[in-house]
Length: 423
Image (tube, rainbow, N blue to C red; front, side, top):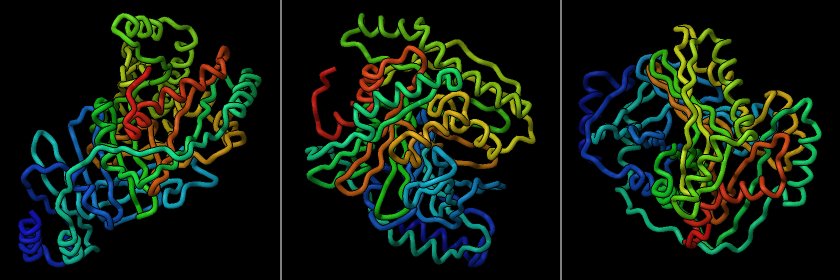
């Protein structure tokens, strides 16, 4: 594979010169892209992306452009990256308020075919791309993760959580909904490989976005998120109001009873409606034609969510930057009204969310796809930070919401420690 890529790059150089202004696309024999990613330990940025419908699986290496703003793209450019939950204040090292890269190498698997896009912009040399290709290692087989937890630290603690819930409910006149969250830091007896972990997470929850963003050796941000921020093809946009959570049942009968409760519970309906209202209002402010589908239940490995699909026809003048600023963060991860909820979180949550509950994905001229970065983890050697949130509205009970946080991280805990599912 490496020889074939280098050969085609040399031929491309003969035709286009050392600094091409267009991309080179090379067809390849199929390989496991996650196994290819696992084999590379010193190439950064390194990005993995799989969409919710599993129509595209993508791995990117290197960067010909690395910017801290939302890109305006043209031709065959495609940028990968994300936005932090809050666009100001302290952020994670290496994960600023906004960061997008245009990759050197972009492996894309779709419809059972694999091709490689080598990106060029008139300023980046073919020789640098050849050097990167020659440094690639062959794919390494993925392995089962099995780690022993040495310590667990929840921030906020359960006692702090109860006070936060009580405080947010006191503000109900100004703040009908706020999404509070928790960081759970786990220290293990060994280094956890993020590709192995992501592979098993994919198996547990296939109908989700799967992603991995690594900009340096120190940290990698991964996720298995059920929530779409939006996808756009041309001027047609798809998004969803995803809010309201119950457990999966221990058997089919209990599962169905819990499912029906999602569709009939007034608290959950109110929580979801606030998200719908926000999305519709912001899309209409961009002169979009908006249509809501009937509510449905999204079932995952350990929880199920109330989901209302939303489709919009956009004005041809609407940009992805406008869509990101209007839709992110939704009340599903922030609260409603947006600005008071974000201020409450900023003032009261005792840790930095960073890219957790942010927006991750890619932007291109024809197609854009973004997930809300929930069900996510920040990994650094033998330390993992897991994140989970819960929408607090009138009627919320702190103990029940704390249990919801545990339910949301249960799947990944189960994978890491190889525990039997006891729920």
